[in-house]
Image (cartoon, rainbow, N blue to C red; front, side, top):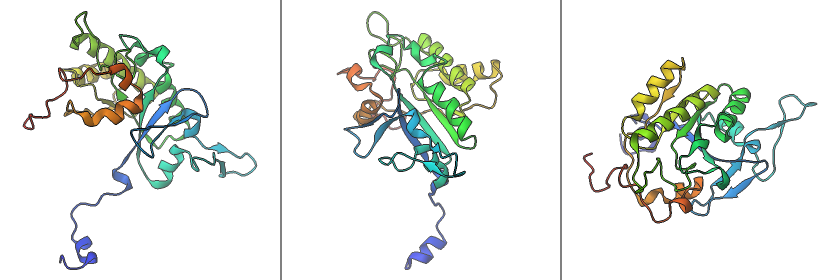
Length: 243
């Protein structure tokens, strides 16, 4: 059965297709914005307006698209059968604070994007990142004390607010990637309390303190804020694979 391609495909247990994919988008504020991510060749940050097609009123079903991107990202997901788009914010430096309070601004970049996406593409699943590193002036995923140590419970309280705001905007899945202890239970409790019972949680159960996150931090604009600091006090040790 292994001899020919057709026979191998015939008995293949697992097949990866468009239905199994999540399309990540690094979202910029403003309009008509597209920035290359130097550490991730071929990947761009884009502004909200470039996610949507512009309808041609005289030609129903026909859309204008910017020539450089060819097809807006959201429409491309629908066309390809990709079920979920994941949004990651790239906010202006002026909005970053030590406590990352912009993360739970109901009129912020991500909640606004969720509302607009669900309005135009109600059948496209939307997932949002729950973490503070894109919003903090120090680039950490949590609030710091005077000695620069992560305050787990205080951070979790902010993450809960962030998740609720995103859910109220209409997101389908919140994805906590911060690695604070106990945040999943607290987020679920808050969602239930606010009658947001249909919002799903995709938890990052294993996230290592790895240099491989460098390109991602560059993409969301937190690398410069983090500097030479690390996240070893709350992310997993790469040397401990059994964790």
